[in-house]
Every structure is written in structure tokens, then in C-alpha cells.
Length: 298
Image 1 (cartoon, rainbow, N blue to C red):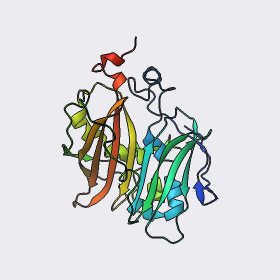
Image 2 (spheres, one colour):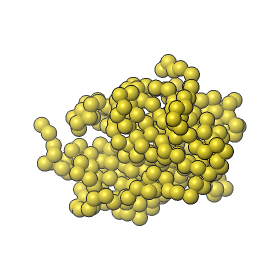
Image 3 (spheres, rainbow, N blue to C red):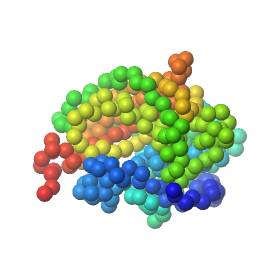
Image 4 (cartoon, rainbow, N blue to C red):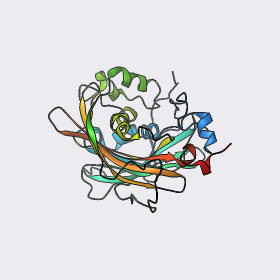
């Protein structure tokens, strides 16, 4: 069990900051993944990386301070990941203080490592601020697609088959055991909605794993999160509730070191009401794939 201090935000020069936290790489035992030390170091990283979705869990206490329960019902968090961190490296979330009393607002949000290295950059918003989020404003195709190898069979516009997803209470409890921010709202007795809202890391899994599994089959490459935007549309998604997840691929391309896909997914409740959405950039390391023999080492 991780020892955690109480949350205490500070405000200086119009910026609200959380305390320094040591985010846990709780997928370190996933051999062959970017979270595995041996695999990550072979690909040029300093060690197994902490997933971007875990860094996003630094923000809900700040978002609650800024906008209360409204963020969990009608808020977004949109983050582009710039530099990876390893297990228990100290990081800190920052949020520009929104205008007092603003029902619709968007502000900058970012994560820094203790030494000042920028880990993630993006925006947080509530309601309808009238401006695009960090990821909606970002171009999806920065490089010429060229000839794809890893994602050769993945096409823009591909629609995922609907799947049923849920976060079981025991899954939420497992996440609470390792997160740096175990807020009281994440348990039934403290939740304003009766059932607790799903934490960000398992919510990302609900919006990602079963859908992308339909196309990733034989990719044979190490993947990592490049960017994530979570949108609470009629939120929050609640622990124990079943939702239908649908979505589609919105861009496929490559950079010098990766092939990547952007996709959008959403959760609908039993009545068909849209509850939450996600935009994700998923990268695949070329050097990890046998389809790039010219990049193989050893």
C-alpha cells in the first residue's frame, strides 16, 4: 500500500498546484510492454514508463477545487504527453485558476516533474467555453502518412463494433490502493451521486481496451499513450454500471519513430444517453516491431 499525504492545493500567481506526488507504475510486471523496464530501456527510455492516464489522476482534486461536482458531470481534461516518467518519480499537476463563478470556462493544465521537465500539457474545461480543447485544436496529421507497416490494415473511418464495458467495484478498489489521489468521492459513502464516479485510469480502459482490441490483433509492436482527452458529457460514469462503448478511428499516420492512430470513443447508458467520451492518440514504436528490421538492435 502506498503511503499518501492529504491533498492540499496551493495558489500562486494565478496557478493552482497540487502537491508533489510519486505516481506508481502499476503495470511494471507487464512483460513486453512500455511499462516493463527491460523493454522500455531497449527502446531508449530510462525505464518502464508511468501511463499518461495515471498522471491524469493528479487533476481531479484540483478540478473539484475549481469547479466542484460540475466538472465530473460536464467537464473535460485534455492532455498531450511530452516526456515519460518512471516509477515514483515526483510530479506535480498545475491548473490556471478559472474566472470566479464562471459556469463555462477553459484553462491551461500541465504536469511537471520535480526538476521542471514538462511531462504533459493541455487544457481543462467545464460547460461550453466556446473554444476547442487542447487536443481538438491539435492537427491530427502532422507528417505524410507514407507506407504504414504496423497499422497497414487500420483505416481512417473504421468504426468499432459496440461493446459492453463496466468498472466493477473491486477494480475501483484496486485503483484506490495505488493512486496518489484517493478522494472520498471515489467511494459510495462519499459520492454526491450515490454510486462513485469511475476514476480516470479505469475510465480510460473502459473507453479504450475492448474497442482497440478489435483492430490491434497482430500489431506486434509496443504501444504507448501519446495523448488523452476525457469528456464528461452527462457524467459521471459510475462504478458498477454497464455502458455501451462505440467509436471510430479518426486518423492514422506515422512520425519518424512511431506509427500512430487517433480515435474517438464514447459511453452510452442503458437509455442511450451519452455519458462520457474520449479522444486518444495511441503510438506504436517502430523499433519494437519486426516489420522494421532496419531499426532492430542486437
